[in-house]
Length: 281
Image (cartoon, rainbow, N blue to C red):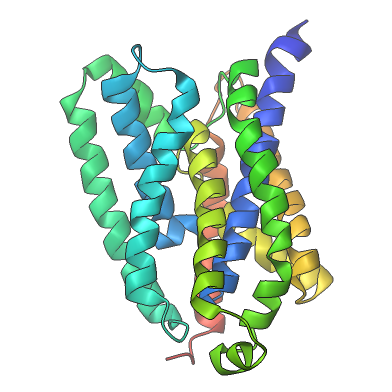
């Protein structure tokens, strides 16, 4: 009974969230042709978090939780639009991409803080724990809320594999092959925003899964996105479930958020990528 009522829904939610973030990161890296792109680095996760906090603060109790992913995806879309306007042309450099992401993340963090202090202190304390990236207390309701978005987003993501392979050749070559570059970028970016926003709406800002999973997938299977996308989902799901298990079992009786452990692994990985690409301009 304990397994079915508590453990299984929590594990399923972790799988769905990790898989969604992994694929969202793979799509973003393909769209921007940049190894540092991911929902959290680019600020998309921050936009989704801010919108979700606004929904929970002002709409919880009067609006169904099934609308929470819609609010988070809306916030993610706003930040993605800024990214698209500021950073996509010609493939942005890692340095420029980081600056854009830091700026957007800072703005979204300030907005989130304002929303937190605007609500009750009890609700703020709950939201602060959620913002660290946790699936604590996940139930079948959360599974039902998240599953439709993932069931739509993941197949659509896989269908973009050929477009991403062509975009990876560069704008001139892709255009010569008949690819509608701007339309393809927008379509892929929208799918990544859908997946990232839905994931963040139920687990908060789980950091670096979207950054690490595509790189691990690429190192295992090569550069074709038909393989990178499903492997990113598998790696992302494994990272999220593993981080949640460590937080739940390694420090008993405390139940620590999975986001703490993904950040502990992801931050050094991020700096490694910066060092490896230090010659980029």
